[in-house]
Image (tube, rainbow, N blue to C red; front, side):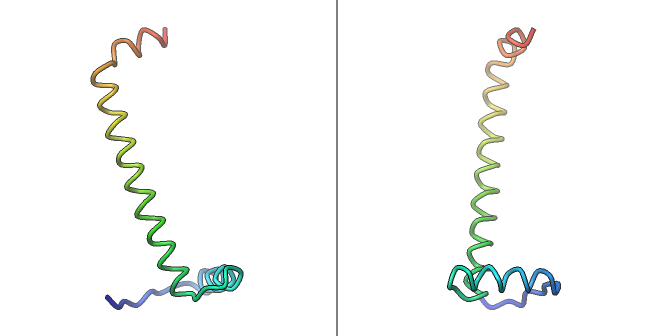
Length: 67
């Protein structure tokens, strides 16, 4: 899928510099950033889900340990 990404001058300069350091195109650097963003958010969502389940199942014990 093609799309247009509008960046500020500072964002463009940062992306360009990072891409040059890594020896990749700006497009590939942006694609990597999107993959990392999605992966990180998915991980955060899984952690929040598991945390919620642990608190639901063991909330009383956790509260007692905190006292």
